[in-house]
Image (cartoon, rainbow, N blue to C red; front, side, top):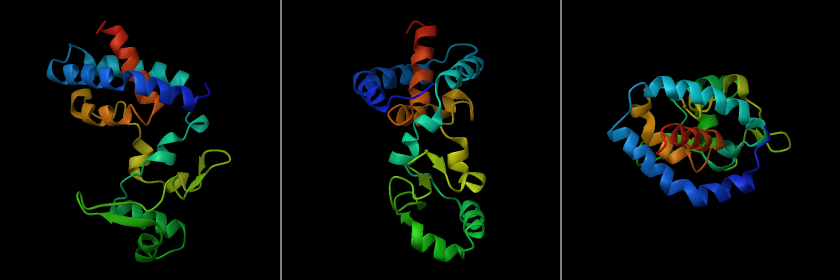
Length: 166
């Protein structure tokens, strides 16, 4: 289903704090079967969200580029890893992470929301939005952040809140 980013941003402004409080409660007191519930809800979410109509993550966030990512992507582009870093990335001092210099991502084709390096994209991109990446309680801090960037994460939290009548 096509994502309406304007509507999504309106919903985020209304529900972001409520959803974060809900996630904090889940983290502190997870119900039995939370991981299975997350998996089932995630399947429903992907029936409703089409990333290619959105690409908000690529437009507003930066993945973390690991040394493996840098080596793989630079080879794909026919560049030396140092040249790749100098051209596209900066070192974020706080966490010592390599991040995109610009937003939207330099590899995003804005006319069709497709990634020009999709086959070799960073692991962070490949796993985003991390809905079922780990145990739900181990990743709640990430979901708290991503609800404001990713309609799929927002919808997952919305559905879980409804399921749990919270």
